[in-house]
Length: 94
Image (cartoon, rainbow, N blue to C red; front, side):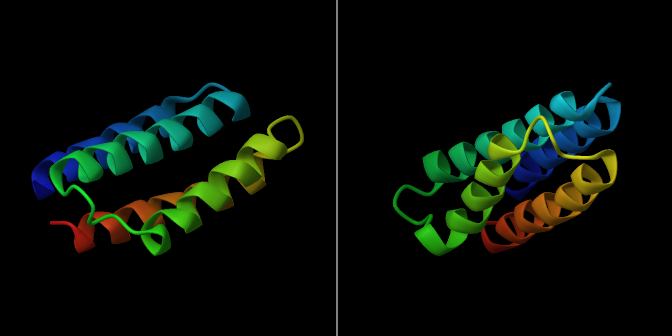
């Protein structure tokens, strides 16, 4: 299970790094979050809690609400936060 989680996060990091602009980077972060949480939820039915997903969801909402105004520096900061959250989720569900 952990290897699949790692692969999902790696794909997200690659998609983020190769995103041509801020909207592409936002999509990459959101897709990584969706893909990882969905995979974990399918593999561990009922184990994923609101405390696991709320910080990720809150960050997605922040990105969505400010998608057209986020600067390159801000998206880099959000990426560090998002991948930190995803890494923590991977550690919890390895």
